[in-house]
Length: 271
Image (cartoon, rainbow, N blue to C red; front, side, top):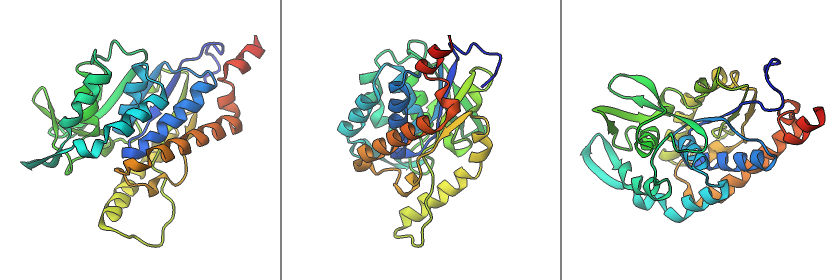
């Protein structure tokens, strides 16, 4: 933490990685942090992290967001998009965001958020901070080859995790203390049981290759071990993944002195 900041009211940033259904772990982490009175001034997320950031910034409690995910049966909502640049259309879940975040605006959220995506045509990372919130979220979640790209202002956008799966950079210089939540830790394995598992693990190895460069930008990183063993579409494991994130959040709070300084109770003792 910057020693020159106001220790009584630090600006706390939260960076949330992508990871499919593994991103539900972010909700457990947020639950653990907010239970201790930690509040965020800026949240940055990509893919699943963008979904968690948007719903939380809209005022939903982590457990309520988990219920939305469980009740929506996401896999049933994905329609084939044959003959296009992807197998499935992600636009079919657009109504979920319109239903639960009716204002559809970055500016009307309770907390500032940044959503990352990749401009496929320009080949560059893009940070959304305004415009239609639902399209920015869908663009950030649009895994190429599986989902048809999202078109915004004649530009094709796909999953932000392709170029940066842990978007800490928007928080640097804007926050006094940065907490990162990463949900793709890969456990060692001796066997691969399916083609899907092979592709998913290979993709995570590639994405995680640059993870350390982003971790060093954080003051604290919360990373539940072994979440990489869950598939990105294992929606039936959502509650289990949530609890793993929650327990890791509690464990990190208890064992990290830098994080404990942020707790309101600790700050009050210094006044």
